[in-house]
Amino acid sequence: MPELLESVLAHWENIMNLLLVTRRTHMYLALFLTPWILVYALSTFVMNHRATFRPEGGESAVWETERDLIYNGSLPSDATPAMAAEQILMGLDLRGSYAVRRSKQTGVYRIDRNDAITPRRITFDPSDGRLVVKRLAFSAPLFLEQMHRRRGYRSGFPADNAWAFIVDLVIVALVFWVASGVWMWWSLRAARKWGAVCAFAGAALFTLFLVTI
Image (cartoon, rainbow, N blue to C red; front, side, top):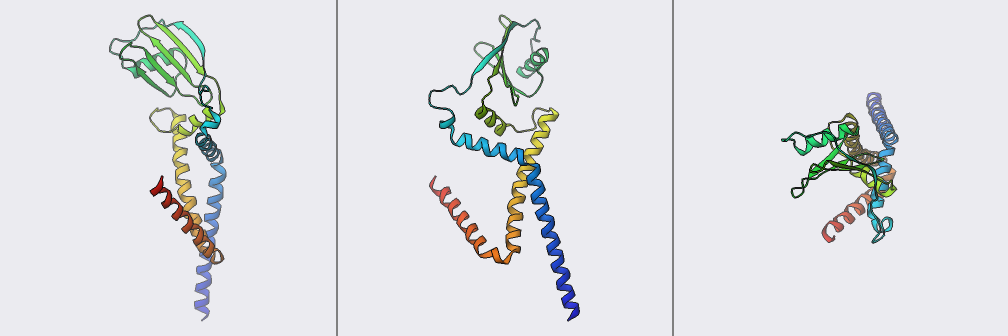
């Protein structure tokens, strides 16, 4: 009998230690990822209420001319849009993450230089060498939407890769919070009944939306 009691107590102590570690991990992850969770929460709110933040007919983006000049450099005849964009951005001292496209009709390049605070749009017309740099006037709703969509490892820049890694960490954390929440709920006998009601209600509502929207 004493051996059985000792085994039960040891088992209970292990469960409590695991519960403590789970709670601490749950808490520290939440504290570390608070800025990212707030960005995703606020940006989703803005996108969900876009009509409020961008009234019908209102300007969604205001581009202000920053530079208007003649580009002195020359692009190689076989330059791809990416090669041209990198050369132009380097000449403007604006190296960083970007997207580029070239019009098949006019041959004009459009480079969108990604930036959290001041995104820029560069247009370059090889026919006359004119290069125009415009910056996006700051707008809180647009800023939040851009941060929400910022992702991926494709740019190759360390800061972009670090951001993408933390986005992956947010995803892992969300799954962990769900799993740890379920485990902690099951560990508390007094909460099992109402926890089961909440879990069933959430699953039922989610299923209803799946088949109706």
